[in-house]
Image 1 (spheres, helix red, strand yellow):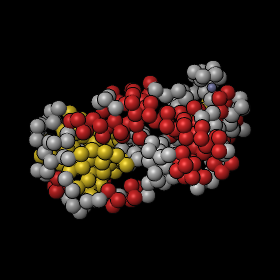
Image 2: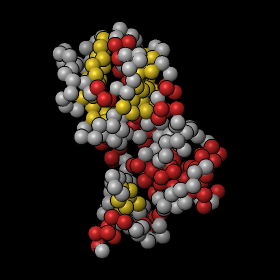
Image 3: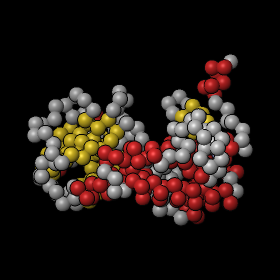
Image 4: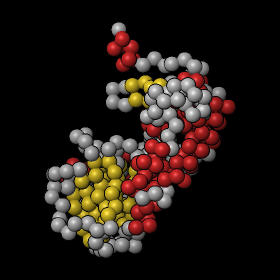
Length: 284
Ligand SMILES: [Zn+2]
């Protein structure tokens, strides 16, 4: 799933390629992906793209006084093409949810792989009309230490869950939270209101460094190479069974119904593996 650094890079890529161009047509191939009906998608026709940005993990294409706000969800992505095929997009088939065609013959597709269709696009006059945007906490990258610490302490729970709760802090998801907690040498199951000031300061520092590193690696990469760039920068996430580059211990994982987390026992849990409920069920 694209998180803050990838969405930041996609916005930067769009600013370079799309801003200043006029939208010729918008084709909605997956009706369920467009969550709003007023204004209609046709309201974008003939208008100039004036900016691109993000709110947490939401991408914002600014078209004058309208915003096309997109949440790519787990399997969504943006593909820019210098030349789009001229035929209109046929609804219902294939991974393309929405196509934005520009006046220079290029444009971009919003796509979603797999059967779970979660990609969501909203055409609104004010981004705050998007439910997920209006509830976002402060941005993880632009929060200062005091805000960060207050937000984390505002919600009692396992730090992994609190850090990825978009209403607490916006932008961090499953992959970068694994990386941040590893860098901060904290167990993903540490309870937020028991973290010391020192641990919170360390977690803040780890969040800033991890996200800034990822943003600087990602921005300047076109959408096509971003996913590979993300993978190559990860130290623990999706690296179960491989050695930790810091201490050499074997990276382990804990699985949940539809996700998993990875961590290094040597760096994060005093060498002790965390209980994996799925695994212990299998062994029983
Ligand atoms: Zn380690």
